[in-house]
Image (cartoon, rainbow, N blue to C red; front, side, top):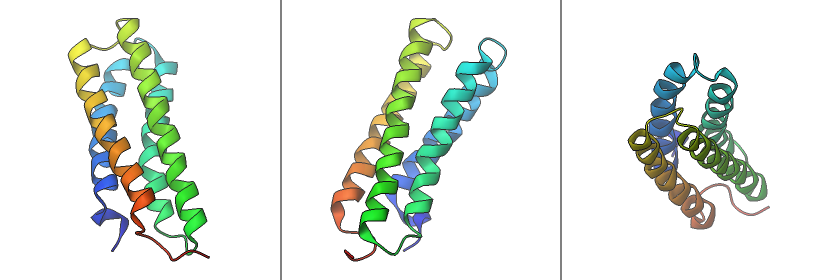
Length: 119
């Protein structure tokens, strides 16, 4: 099974693509927020791909925990974008829904036993 087969990756990838569209529009209004949001989205998804390459279960879980941390950062950035009126409230809600799904699937993956055997 490759990272592309994992539900956690699929939802994070969907979230990353949606955030890219938002960041593209946000760039003119608040480039620093756009950069923070974009970096967190890249990290959330890329850490899943990275985790799949580890041969030890602790490193696999650690990398997935980094994905969860990035998803929390996305939540914070979306709250700020909504609070400052930088991004439409409905868009923020849609992104937050995707983020919540991604959080669920990454957490499920951590506890699923999928990945390398314990070292």
